[in-house]
Length: 365
Ligand code: SF4
Image (cartoon, rainbow, N blue to C red; front, side, top):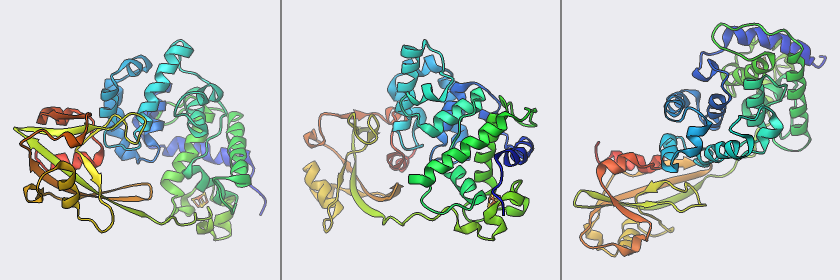
């Protein structure tokens, strides 16, 4: 079978996407700021989770200026629950750089965008193409799956020569689309054919060319797809080597004193910097969580009341939080200088990581 040409693939993808594009709020605008926020939120996160976050964010911080000058805690609160919090901090740093270095203008080329914090090659290509109709390629997990299947390409798609080849194929496609006429779409306000082409690749990977159950018979590029024609769709992309999960146990103390709770703010520069949490300590293998907690707080174990444990995962880490409640009487120096007593309403307003928000919910509204 002959390799499919970029022009014929683009000619099949554009009309399909104009008809099938899901009606998503960030597709009703060409505002690069709104598109940028959606792209950053969509990294590692599903569309249905992102929609309410994006709507809240756009209402509260509708442009570069409001984001650049917002207190960091407000930015983190709007991101609370989405995880990978460096994304939120980088959004704010990039907005500040746009004010400082670009006169408050949103840069329109992929090269300028790449110089901003938190914007890598994929995001630069996505913003430049979607908002400014530039022929800039994109390559993420969905696009990798689509392209490795269409071209039946084996090997590690995230590095080495195959990665270079995939970027080049993505570039050929969006360049071919630039030559095709732009037509309006049913559900969205697209800036041109480059925007439509890149979004069609994202959409195909998200809705049709899925990892386990691709809908090949209904796919617009099925006649040109080498993996489908060879009946080897599941062979592409080449599966990653499995990484073993790492189990982590932590003991968490919900310390209460006269209706106030003890919270610590995570230090700058580390994981989840700026977020607030109940004091917690690692539980070494072979130790009991209550014993670790009692030792660190300087209280007898008998004062601790067990709460519902919380489990969550970050990349390959499987984290098990064993949670205990305690009524404090004295000052607990052992929790550090960055600890504060907060009221219940302050606890609700502060940014907490998702796992600690689950703990807070156990105590009612
Ligand atoms: S034909 Fe199947 S494998 Fe090929 S691109 Fe379409 S959905 Fe993916």
